[in-house]
Image 1 (tube, rainbow, N blue to C red):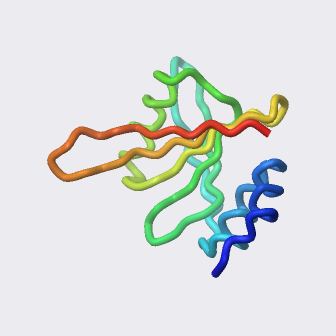
Image 2: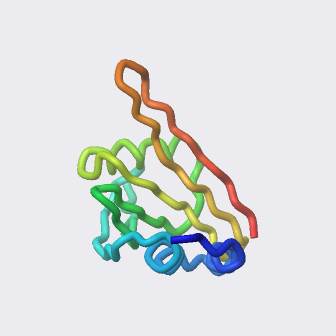
Image 3: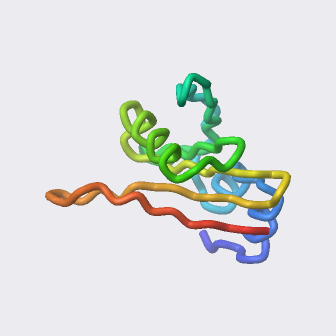
Length: 116
């Protein structure tokens, strides 16, 4: 399936992650939530897509880097392979986070920032 660049860009700009992953990339729908306790508060991640055990979540708001890593570690306990999109709808910013896992090497958190 060829990815429509213009359509993908439009879906990114409108924060329509489910359509991007399911319609454009061919992932399966996923709708579970995952509560994460951070600093005495609970942040709820919303799942929006899944493909062969890799789950994609979205979190409302962009937290600092250290907090994002803590969230990633909690999610990894239940969903070994995953992507988390931290989205700030009001300012039009997104931080996409995933962890590269290589045998015999330390985990490396990767992030990509996107501004609409």
